[in-house]
Length: 558
Image (tube, rainbow, N blue to C red; front, side, top):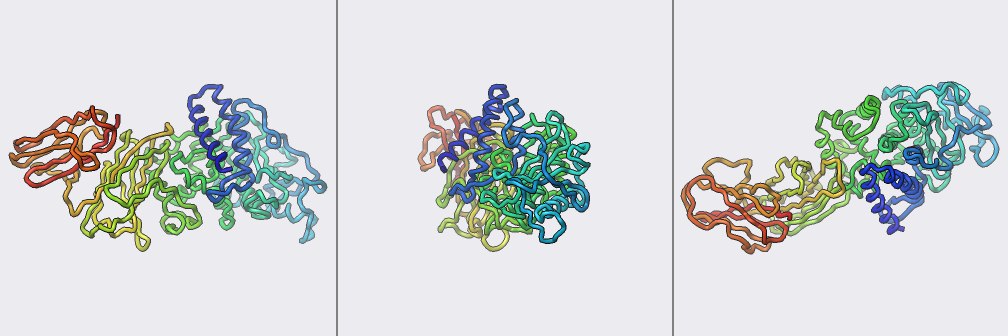
């Protein structure tokens, strides 16, 4: 089963790439696949990282987007008109009309312990939806759903109780071709089946919060031909469940895939429910009102795209995304609820892409667009208090990355550094339990963006950091360009006339090229490094003069 699941993930990645090409035939392929994929992954989802567990689909609403955006046949059991049921009950505050049967397998339990002539389950449904209204509209200030002009028999929001089994619930528009529309909700009649992670009244309550938020979404924007907005709908509605019913935590079931696949974009659709964690981050970091601002901007632009985030964050969304990656490390027993996620202790751990305990540490990896990787560097027994680490990040595409380094401590504060120029000098690394390097790709296209990195241990300060460069010093500057393809320029400066040797070593310390070996005058000098005969990889450029030596990393990428 796990093999099948991973195969489908790979196929979905491929089809997403086809979708980006924009051809109508590819649209049809994408939508056909996603309809089947959502149904399959909804019923069989990975909960603990290994075991496949049968689960109901959190919400059927986005299946309507998938099956109508390319004019494909509607999916049975989802795409239907409003049902006609035996009875209805209007909630105490008058906002909801709850429809239900009293006979047959579609009916809820008719138990009526409070003897008000209304089944207790219907009472509970009305109470759950009224609580959702109070939080989402009265407290958070979202607009009321659009009027349906009494299509359900009155002005209330209509909720239909039936036996679903495959879904928690769904919300459908009355006008399927309109950008905005009134809508109606269908929920399960008991939530007792094992496919529901939250059963009974808990399942009912989170569904009420989730689906009612969809009726609000459709008052902002709900173009069925815009599949991308369905990601925003599902991720934000799953977040809203926890705002309305903080103690149920149904959303935790959906986080494994999100934290496992951090190298994928956070908008990756198969993780649309797990992506609710992004809205938990935004709400705590910027206030819950930021989610409302997102929807208001979607309504203004009549579409959803990633550019909306740049608009809201004043072109600083790259920094927001990179900070989100840092938050995602502090989960499980690393959780710091005062600083990061309040319920982070219950979140899974991110996948560690590389572990290192020998230095120099050299490795390479990749992310997809908007993805992040986590690389861990463990202390070495030879580390001394006065040692320093030189962290060098070498991306294939410059200007497309944000980089953070965490000095993690199992006890005490864990500082986080923002690395701005691709190099970072960390003094006294032995005081940390381990280090975590987090590169985040800020590009909004592509499924493979390559990078390499090195982490070197130095006794004391035997190297020079360009940021502290002063004229007149003995200095080896970083070669430019770096990374490079075949040719790059190496610059160095001498304070006085002296014999100088500039050479290139491989990672075994063997000299492969001598660039300069002569007496040089005081001042700045440049030499050309032609690597036409060398293989791609990381090389060390060394400057030796007067008993001193300095090193720089150079990444050759042919």
